[in-house]
Image (cartoon, rainbow, N blue to C red; front, top):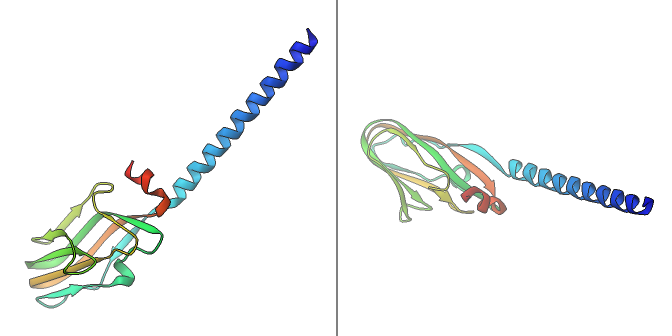
Length: 149
């Protein structure tokens, strides 16, 4: 009987060690996911004339290896006129029409920008100036399936 008790004890110790190792791997994976995403501010130069384009790749482009999930875009400073936010260029995909100053919010993955994509804003008929600000979820490429859910 002592051999049976030793065998069961050894199996129990091995099982506990296996569970502990699994929990440690899960915690490491959770920490990696937590560090893979952060929220970044979106800001750009103003359009100060009645018409113009905001196209600043250094500020409004997604860097290689990352995605952006746009969460909020705020347009202020004008009382008349319209603007449109495009993907990559004014001849690219129109993403958001801006009929007046205001705040536009987006759910997770509703406005996803791929690595290399950028926001470009074209405005016409402005009275005042157009200022764009906002926020985006910025995350590493491997995190995309987790972000989309």
